[in-house]
Amino acid sequence: MAGYLAITGGVGGAKLSLGLAHVLGPDEVVFAVNTGDDFEHLGLSISPDIDTLTYTLAGLANPKEGWGRQDETWSFMETLTSLGGETWFRLGDRDLALHAYRTDALGSGRSLTEVTADIAARLGVAHRILPMSDEPVRTTIQTASGPLAFQHYFVRDRCAPEVTGFEFSGAATARLNPAITELLPSLNGIIICPSNPFVSVDPLLAIGDARRRLSALDVPVVAISPIVGGAAIKGPTAKMMAELAIPSTAAAVAAHYGDLLDGFVLDEQDGDLHGTLDVPTVVTRTVMVSLADRIALARVTLDFLDSLR
Ligand code: FO1
Image (cartoon, rainbow, N blue to C red; front, side, top):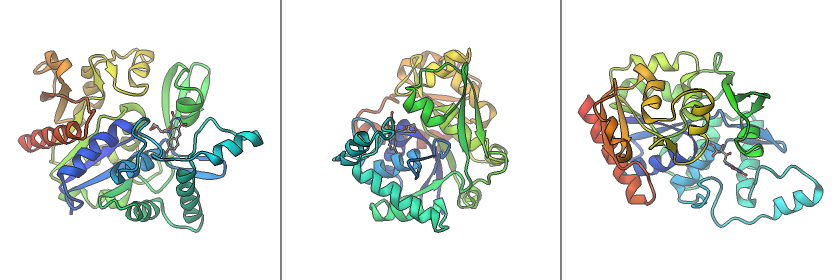
């Protein structure tokens, strides 16, 4: 029975998730993770946002990149390069073993939820990491020069193409993970982590009636702005907003989530927005450099949620 559900994707979401995991026990917070970034690559089933969160909560994440593992070796990539294989998506040797294990498990009919829980347990993660769906939902980036699979846009093409829109193929028929749905009635609040709203949060909200289900709950939903002072801390959020003719401001992120939100956490740099948005706000330091920053932001967010109940 969980008190809180955190919706997360990418590196920014994993940072706050680590703070939440330090403040709340495994029976108090559960993580719903974006799978829109998932793809098949070199015959492997790769789930980057699940792995970024798992490694982060396990204390195994590469601290510089936020994704992949620390203490990696690169024999696989070096050999793949010598064979002329695709090396734009970098897979360390330890990370590769996880992808091979997951691919084999999925191939034998186990669900992504089950395999994710198995891997998390083996890596010593006590908290529940739930894929947003066990059915495939894949983010396609629509660009001025045609559609791109997410990882082709994000990694291979380094977020350079001009974004004109997004498509979450499979979202209409996919089911929100039943393990998430069954938690909803027992929740005290929902946290939308400071992830990219378009490609790390919207895929979950696009699944079937997920947005309606979350809105219908009489528990507060609070998002932390991924935009600080008109820029994203990491990743293409601000660039996407500019290309979509949306102001790259924290206010525009709050407007993007619309009536789903009961509260919005602003960084101190955007303190001037406090009290000017349609949604209640709190102002704090949202830029997370240290573990203490992650924990402090988690506490502010939880206090804010409790004040909205
Ligand atoms: N992101 C990159 O920018 N370059 C990479 O080579 C790369 C490899 C990679 C391998 C495993 C993994 O779990 C994540 C990886 N990522 C890489 C991040 C990935 O693209 C995620 O989708 C982003 O973090 C956005 O969520």
